[in-house]
Image (cartoon, rainbow, N blue to C red; front, top):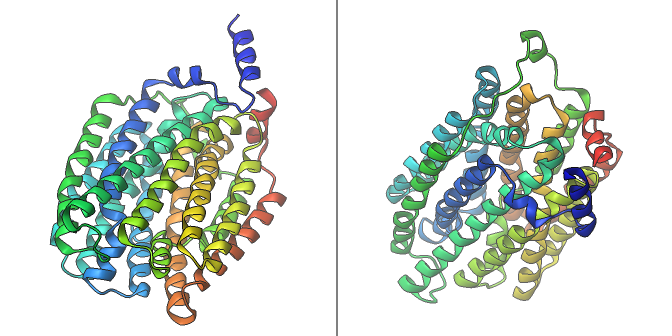
Length: 419
């Protein structure tokens, strides 16, 4: 009776998202989603306005903003591999994730002392250390908590919660801006201080939620020899293609600066970000569920091609209204491709090696983020505001073409065959 009901419900939901399945998601998925939701409220309250704080209050140039943003991701990247590998080694994910979230929460008040770009860079680095520790064990715990044929839904739902928290964090920042400085064009130092103070509460609540609510999942025992086996040539090729894409995927701070270069006010820029994350939130879970029914590669290729078009649009943008449209499309890209790629990683590798695989995957993204942002900043300074987006569009198109030619391993293909 159960399997028949499952097939019937899927036929009634051809897009793959069955609302009943959301209610059946296990406790860990809900807990990890709530944790991401709360931490992203805190993070985005601060990080969304941080480029504006650097540019408007501290007078930092785009090249150095790119260095700070890219360096924050890259300098702590080695921790992602170590943390993921260690979670495989000990067979535990939860407390490594708690440690990572705790570090990010603890550093939040340090932004109050940000009176130079070096202080900002240090604070961002410590914050990313926390993310470096938590990212791989958290993703592995998401994958461990559901069956393989529901990886897409689980990662999509967690992504939706993440994006929803980001959206609310930006709304909170907008309210702080409005009540503190009204429609002033540039961010003021006291507004940034108020935002940082308000961000502390959800950060610590996120750590509390994870510590109380999550449970480690018993992993299948693997002999030491199996742990030493490589993750496979298809996985390595996939990482190379992701690196190619990431080379053109500079920090989103440059999109914020692009909107500002077209005359968008501070509140209008934050409003565009709200649209972006609202669309991301609405698209992520249905797209993840859809990826459980069709090849995940197809959604990722489509997302990367859309990204190429969006970045081309950012290069050619000449009016503020085009930025609203492009942010809308950018949110759809993120919702469709971001969680789906993480689900594909889980499909490709053995359960006992998931932490290591996610550590390597996240490290590749973080390490390439540094040259990507430095190149974007240098292109902006040398050739103008449009040039980083031409470059990003070209890299995304090349990566999409490479992914079309790439073949996933058998264990990833068999998910679609069973469903």
